[in-house]
Length: 79
Image (cartoon, rainbow, N blue to C red; front, side, top):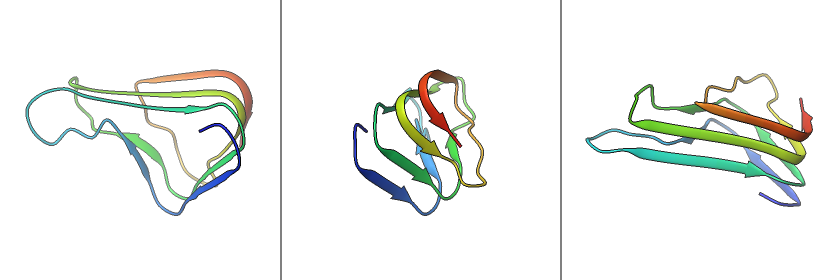
């Protein structure tokens, strides 16, 4: 996500794995405002890999939580 405004009312799920295999998911925020009304989450599995990168812009978690395998906070605002 690189600019403008993006609002999610509920959860954002990265790397959702429900069957066999591997799931990889990433969210890269480099500008703008990304608002999450719920949580940023992933499947609780060694075969699901979720990465969140904040490298500019604003990540507004309202009252939610972040549950990912890797969180890269490089620049920008987390609120």
